[in-house]
Length: 561
Image (tube, rainbow, N blue to C red):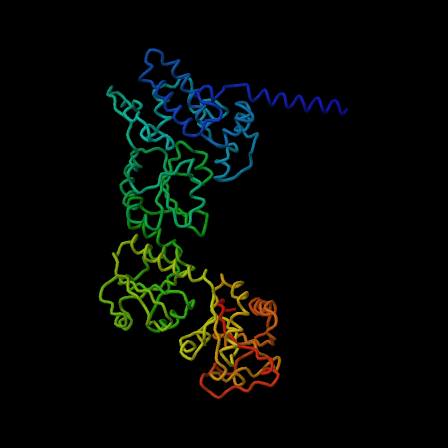
């Protein structure tokens, strides 16, 4: 029984090995070695395509047709990494089996098409669906092959053969002319095809795509509109086209049932949104794009100004003054682009007090506010163009990222900082509060907590210390867990706190306390009042004085629980 199984196994390996060598040798057809790179394979295909061009083989078109089919089939396989891998392992018969559904079937969507799991094949043979019969005119076959998106302007790319094109005869005219470029060429439109469709899957922002089947008269009528749409929105939305004619299976997987069709894909949802309006109304198409975009821009009025400034303390606030009633799609784009590093707001022209405060006399105007009082700000003086504004805000965001990655320091919390918002009633953060009796204690504490600063360096944390004579602690924290507590977590906006005892002998213990509070596992108690500075000295118990533990404050930015 064992010998029989061994025999069958060996027999299978022999059959597989024969498959590799049976059928057409695509490398030999193209005249390239088996280790040829993509550029070499492409160059060989161009050369042979020209060799078997209809215009050069009018004496023997049947032979040229036969050879061109072989050359095209070889290139179709060797230029596709997945097909090439299968062919190298299993030969032409293995490739046929793979493409007929016997291989890596079962994949859905774009990935199925890309990996060849039963997807579309150009197919002069080689196991795919044959679009061209033996009775088809060679010139038509040649023309149709190079009219697909993948081969559009194929000979114009990087060689000296650009003066040689396939012949396109107008029916009944008898007049010859060269191939025409796509009506979408030389524009800001992104031309999608089967080889680059994966870029749609990794998009970060909105894409809007015009699907059609061949550049017929209807599509050419829409082309002018589509090109103008791209000119207007390309700074915040990718405008693309996809010709379903060379790739019908792919369009079917993308749920494109009718063409032409316009579909918007925004970053928050993989399901496309179909445009139902007039294909020639530019403004309607742009409104459709804008209405579906993610928007993190905050409307600002005189009443909400202070609240806006206290959003994400420490993060710059970008304010646009505008006469428009709705948020521009470009500003929506910016609000998403810099969602984690800048806070975006918008002031309408009827907010006269805010216009007067910042001396705004023209629209649009942009300022960047750097403090929670709205006193430290800079006005954008550059060119009011989308690329220039984007570059300017990238610089602002980069400064924020640079600060967040830097080493944390222990800073002093004084009356001015507190009333400016740090750890106060408007601060939606946690503060860990200690008091210092002397400068020597500051030096000791600042050295001791360096590992903690390092551990939390990627978090939006600010570290402070406070002088013991500046705050009346017992009148604020009245429900102490321990009469000797010397560590206070304060949530300014909630007006709640948690207190702990830390002996100063273990940084690990300090980190554990921080993690305990931030995880929500610690019970928070109500503060009786806000912190008050410049009052009487607090009364610290004798054991606390003997321990000589320093107090520090550091604020952790955390969303309101």
